[in-house]
Image (tube, rainbow, N blue to C red):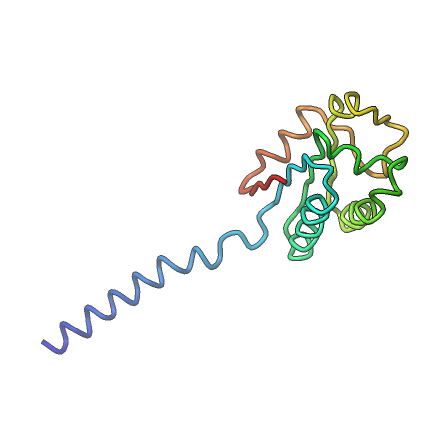
Length: 141
């Protein structure tokens, strides 16, 4: 009876290890795609700070600025969004990608020439490449 219990405990331990090991190891460097739609200063800052912290943890990062968030990357709005633009610059400097929706730019009057340096006007191919990359995780603000 004692050897049966020992064998049963060993099986339970192995099964637990088999189940938990992939969870602990998975996603250590999965890419992150952040869909940022807001121009609310607090919510946008939360998204950028969170994204930067994940990038520092070695997650390749793409931020997609669309809808009202396109104004965050407009140099003419630096007074209202200076912290945001500094965070965008830091993300770009660390190797991240910041894409911006051209249709939203047009709607909110943001010109290509007004964009923070390094922000890339997106198209379906650029967004798809980042959004559908292997093991990508997505968040929206």
